[in-house]
Image 1 (spheres, rainbow, N blue to C red):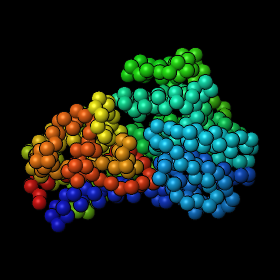
Image 2: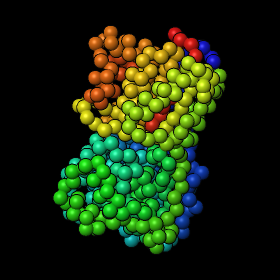
Image 3: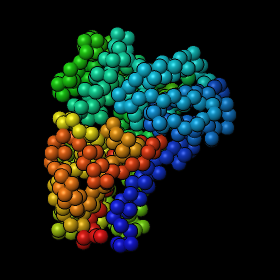
Image 4: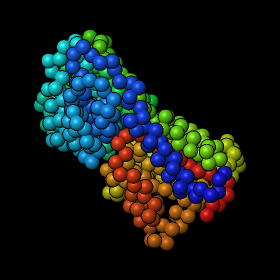
Amino acid sequence: MNHATPPRDLLASMFQAAIEAAQPHRCIPEHLPEPPRGRLVVIGAGKASAAMARTVEQHWPGELSGLVVTRYGYGVPCQRIEIVEAAHPVPDAAGLAAAQRILDRVAGLTADDTVLCLISGGGSALLALPLDGISLADKQAVNRALLASGATISEMNCVRRHLSKVKGGRLAAACHPAKVVTLLISDVPGDNPCDIASGPTVGDPTTCADALAIVRRYDIALPDSVRRVLESGEGESVKPDDPRLAQAITRIVAAPQMALARAAEVASRAGIPAYVLSDSIEGEARDVGKVLAALARQVARHDLPFKTPCVLISGGETTVTVRGDGRGGRNVEFLLSLGIALDGEPGVYALAGDTDGVDGQEEIAGAFLAPDSLERAWRLGLRPRESLDANDGHGFFGTLGDSVITGPTLTNVNDFRAILITGRAEA
């Protein structure tokens, strides 16, 4: 191990490398379609969509026009593609208006035209256009309930697909008979295109009955309008064999595994073997924290199943069942649970963060954990278990001065977790 690199700096460099690996300017150009005989219309939604649009403009040889919607603060200057900003993770009126304008832009296209759809994580909330009879307030209520329920991202997006005029393949169907090429930056475990921004251009094999089963599973209270749409079947999505999707092509241009591999390279260059455990870990964040703490202790104390020094890297999307009134964030919830389980284990450090720069609803990507984190917390009057019970990871690590703040990263390939096990106490 290169002891000249402090653990915090090494982990921060790995996190930055993961973010950089999924930047649109790196992954978009080689996947652009052939110029059509007719028009190229660019649409899209997600935290990376504006940066994706800028890359398209920089590399497209001919005429184009379009509109994409991104999160507030994630816009970048574009010359020919209009950038609209809206709210995430709970949709707002700006997102609703943008979704309607996108539908209007793809109306009346011909078979000679091509629609280039730029989709990344966050698109579910940003591209919010509820079915007739469902108000924006109803959609917001459902979104808040889903976010607090502990449901997986796949389950949440199944419900969302059946309440929308654009999700679940409806946007691609609206583009017919034009060709649709969708470029995806994946932020979901398993990289299923159906689940990335709830699959606006992808046929959906799930049903209204599936959505209702999820609602029952998590005891989610539904507004009457939403329940009616699901129970009547009016919310049924566009299926994979729908002929309107025959000219729809989907390409994943960046995914969590790519980012984790880049982070592993940074560790290797510092002389530390890195092991990618999985790019798709799900489950309650605090439970994942306990499991990975047990693994880290096994490595630190017994050099099994990996020898020290090493770094254990993982991605995916954990969930938080909100019970407290703290400042949340699934990555800091994981990290706080990890720290409590490790209980100051010597030589074990960790960083966890969301690659979009926003963990939960805070403009904070994540945090850093060291062997002395709990001791420092107690000296400051913090009680780690109480902070965890209150879902207050951001409050805990913010008080310690260990928050990781990146600002808008302009991409999103899900959670990043790295546990550095040195085999010795580092300064």
